[in-house]
Image (cartoon, rainbow, N blue to C red):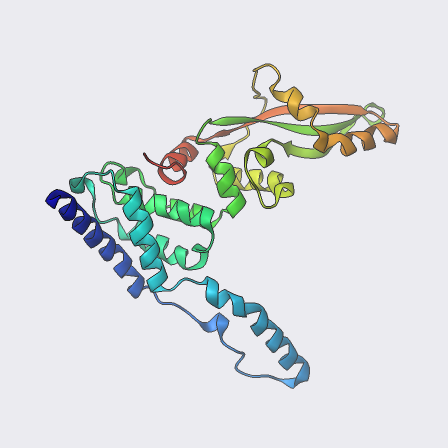
Length: 272
């Protein structure tokens, strides 16, 4: 019983040291203040409209107390199975930017969990050395839907992709009708599934995944399911109705990079 109390005290002391950084991070309110001047009636109208539009943000930007509460509860839970002697104060280069980022993304469940995982692993001396300072910036460049897509990579490191092509022999050309069609929209509960190809572009841009040229998955039936998916019915019908050329597919795959695998291990996957 006494050992558990000592461990809880140690964890709390470490977390208090982390959340204390919040006090040192300035909270700027300039964007939420009314315009200094209102020149003319039209400008006054615009100013009022802008203030009304920005008003809800005041409730979304987390303050010190909210961040401290979240870190204390979430990070403590993630470290509950870590031996007391393994819990350390995280590097300020990780903790500082993480806490700052939580001010603006704390209301997003998917993104705040990534920050919480990152901070918890940075406080464990068994994983702290593998935490890259660039992870915070990567999370800041992710949308909530992209965080969900990355969760699918916790169970496997590659997935099939296809491009729907319109081949036109007469002009010896091809048109990419749909690029990077995948099942991510069905594997994850995405808010905007139509943006999945854009999400794929972004996680590749961030160096987490790659689409190697000429590579594809050889497992039987993997691509047939994508090629026959009802989501492509209308697009394929348009090609047929054009009376020119034929339907074709480019089979590809998307896979984690080495950097992406470390990101999944240290930021996305829940440690047990």
